[in-house]
Image 1: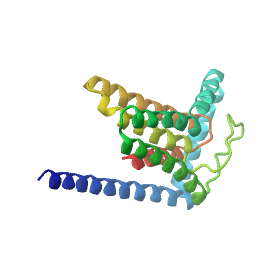
Image 2: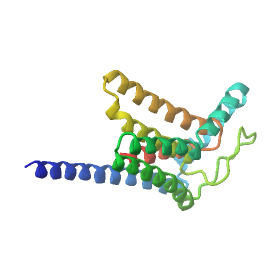
Image 3: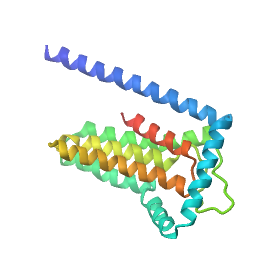
Image 4: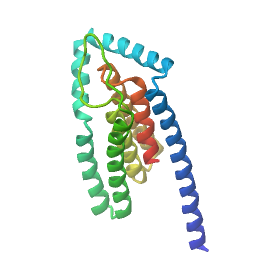
Length: 210
């Protein structure tokens, strides 16, 4: 009886995972298609947002300096060094081998998925007359946004069993949302990504983990 119940539970989780994965994939594919085809309303919205955002940052040197620091802190390599240490802790100290490997493999998939999508879509970085910052490579999706979203979601899920109170869980989720929001805003305010780049990055990162 217990075995049947466990099997049914796993089947329901698998169905939810496949359903959410397909929904995210369809949404990302649709936006990527619009970007590739240079859909005019989306292009105008993105370019207008970049002009406004970079003008705002340009007038505030202290904000620009803070954004550049955050950009460096949230480099995917830095996030994943920390996450690898967390995975080792979950594996060795908490004896949750499967969970640790799931977290590690998922974050590696996220990192590589961001690179693959960039080369599939091949969107150029935003171009402004007086750039606030520069970043190499293609623009869609934002690697910072995707990896930060995946990283934050994995951290919350890994820590969830240890967070016994509602307050601690609310704090963890709030901190994760704040971290991803600041990272996504950082990319647009520095003028290195369009809003659609960071939006798809966040959706893909969270969707992959869930």
